[in-house]
Amino acid sequence: MAEICCGVVNESDPSVPRELSSRAARRRRMEIRRFKFVGGVATPPESGCCKRQKTEAAPSPVPSPRECENAVDSSGSEERKGAGGESATSSESAVLGHCPKYGMSSVCGRRREMEDAVSIHPSFFQRKPQIPGNLHFFGVYDGHGCSHVAMSCKDRMHGLLAEELGRGEVEPSEWKEVMERSFLRMDMEVVGGENNSTVVVHCRCEKQTPDCDAVGSTAVVAVVGHDKIVVANCGDSRAVLCRNGKPVPLSSDHKPDRPDELQRIQAAGGRVIFWDGPRVLGVLAMSRAIGDNYLKPFVSSEPEVTVTYRSPDDECLILASDGLWDVVSNSMACDIARMCLRGHAPGAPLTDAGGDCGPDKACSDAAILLTKLALARHSTDNVSVVVVDLRRDT
Image (tube, rainbow, N blue to C red; front, side):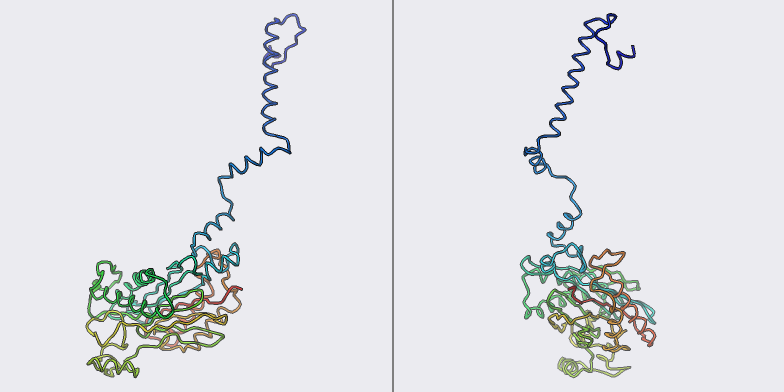
């Protein structure tokens, strides 16, 4: 019985019927043929082309990590590719542009309320395929009277600028007009004009209204591209470029006693009164700002714009509110930022970020150290600092 179950039958045994022996033999021959047929398909002759054709017709459904990285590159998304991305070739880097590392610090300091806001948007605007590199947005806003104008600028300014840029490729001579239109639209929104319903108020004060006439904010905005840095400034926040160890101011503070600003205010029928420093009508310590509807036209929202072409000697860009610049010079700020960046390779990948374009430890250390220095020097204002690493990864 055991022999029959195992399929082993002795045909010479007279106790086994001949019919059963024949059936078992046929079944065994069929199994042998079936095995040989399957094996023949699996192992065709080496000279044949069946295996090669099958591989081309049915590729693996799971892409390799290298293929995934190339797919990200071809899509034009630059936030996924840092300056130190190992998978990008030199030609791909030229197309995508250098995505800078950055760090920021923003503290209330000795003020009762935090009225500063910082806005950072890498690759906020993707340029046309034939033009290399995306554009990266950095902004610092120093509010006064309340924080909601600064917060509105943080939420909306980069979007308004992207809309203006989307109208067509901008030439260097046209950046001034683009920035002026963006700042004007932002000013109209916060004083209750264009698209006022889109302003989202995040402030924690009792007013909770975006159209208060006595609230405003400075704005210093930097757009970093692969070949140039465009800075628009309205107020007394500041942008400073560190180039070859030397500070290069990219903006000029709008103080009421600045000769050209004083002349503009007086020509509009206003006055500058010295009350704990020069102030417009004895109230506002800056001559340009977004908001402050009750002080118009003496306080203007029109920015001053500079276009600076990048150089291999560029090391970093510092944007900060006057809480830093009131107590720290441009030269000292550059020296501290360079000291923090020294010893760190351009675009060196982070353990947490994996080399993606984004926050960098060296830049964050520089921003934090500058903030601590301002507080140690008894700055009485909110302090917000952004440091952008501009060194080329060559």
